[in-house]
Image (cartoon, rainbow, N blue to C red; front, side):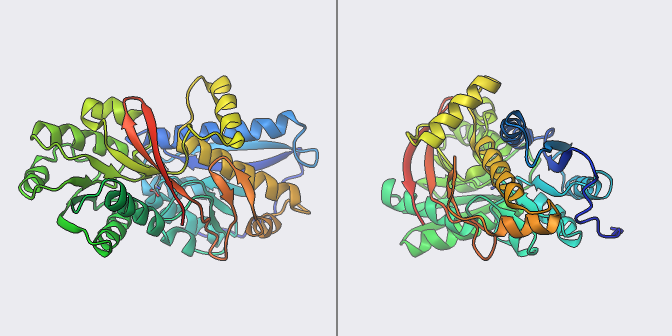
Length: 365
Ligand code: PHE
């Protein structure tokens, strides 16, 4: 990477505030970026319709990382060095945030991840923020749900070793489930892009687990569910936020029904912030917003609030204002960015019920 002269603060003399966004808009994680982008655009449109910020309109430049770490890095380089954005919203997949955020950090451009939950992401530096909870909590949530709600003792793990998020979450679950008295009867792996999981599932079947924890992304999870049922495994699957896609049921079909995952919000909430958001989103896009749409919206709103407080709209002052985010009433909960630039929030557990996401419980930190 060639580090060009710092462009921080170089907003061009225009009537626009340029904000960059990159995510997976194509590839096997495409709904991550497509949903996030809808949430971000909705927030930006609301501000622009109301006259913009300090007389300027927000302008969003969105690039596709195709689900590849190196493309995420290239996208951020381009947004900063060619498009001169003052801030970046980006990074659903933790692995891609880990590849891309160091570039924003080195150029001193604030980077807000809506959804990357791996703890290492914000450790990259003081310009990297996230508006979601982190995986040490998310792994604890499912271990607690398995122990206290499902009352099970024997779980197998199937992790994606090519995915930083999956590996981190599998490790946390392993530790937390054992701490609460459970036993991990198998801990096996696959790699994103695999399509045949029968060897691992056959091994898992021989251990008779009461559930299988699969903290991966929806495409592989759907296939794993199908193949588990084909092999006669009846135990439910459990997972994390990486399951949250309308494609999960399309790929997993009946096989994924009844399985559980942790997530950032539920559309069943009666909180006015949620009902209002869901109503507006459906009116605009004619679909029910998933967690990424909600997190994209919250990330954009938090950035907008920082832009409004910023005296000169320079990247430096935007960064400083982001760091002061406190008690922000988001769709996904009340958001305060702590000294590690992370948010502490509750999680919900969802049961897959066809295309619906059935709310089970809320677990607070
Ligand atoms: N938390 C996941 C990761 O860090 C990304 C994700 C968030 C996916 C929310 C779906 C929904 O990789």
